[in-house]
Image (cartoon, helix red, strand yellow):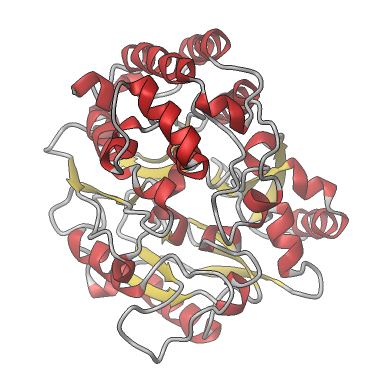
Length: 448
């Protein structure tokens, strides 16, 4: 039976703004308070989805969240009508209002961790929504994320959904941004690679000193248990604390994997050689020939990697067995990174081509191509069981671009977040979107 790795890209929400909310994310903090362009951001994301579809990849869409999150503001003591809640929050705590307006759910690599049926004990595809409890503006996402994923992958015969882990620091979980799967074929049993920044209970693991380590070992272990993964099918690796302190807030900022290949920076991990040996050994037991490409620090520094998002790229398998690397325009703008990539593709290795996409609106807020997609490996039967409304087609692309042009603003500043009309615009747009994507009622305003 044929299998696919489907990329479900996050559709940028109508409140996309540069709030600078993510401590430890250099781009997010550097561009704080600039005017954003939600319309351009959403269209840039859709163009990438369409381009991958046109290249022959199966591409899906993951809907954004309702923002501002009036329910979150009410839970923090703001009362009255929705307009009064927003007005009072803007007057008394503008940073809090900005947090509840964040469109960060666009980066669906953080939406959940996904294990395909070939790896799990019960033979179903498993999803665990990420609690994202390190940042308030992201910690409020998982209830809606769970409903949206449930509407996309509704057939319980093929799909299993788990609630987010306990929302405490010991179980900080950032989803697929710290998870990669290696395999010979997407439909065969593979090895799932969980990367953590610290341990909550074991002081033997060093921790970063400047920025928080958002993923814990304990969270990764819990997800592996929930998904019914065997010991032979998992590898846990620690991120290098020093690179976290240089702005590598997720593993997908310093490494990316696909198939039998791990593409990573020389300084990405602790105990690199023993970790690579474990991956090689466990994959060999499953019929796969593991390979790694380590990018030397003297060719591309960690700072270059963070600023260009070289590793926050999509590594895709093509029909001829070679791989395609999807990178943001910022990689071409960095002379050292671009020189490295030219050498990489001409060396005759597994990565044979690089394609560049303009994702400036997302990049300025701290997310590149890899942040914008959630990878889900599916066989033909499982793909047929996915809600067809969320699979990208040429007509759906046309419909969604028209929807964006109809509902999105082309400029948004922090002061605009206090406008109650923005909430009405967002709800109107999302109500129409649920009909386009055939999701049913998934948003708080539709349910309450």
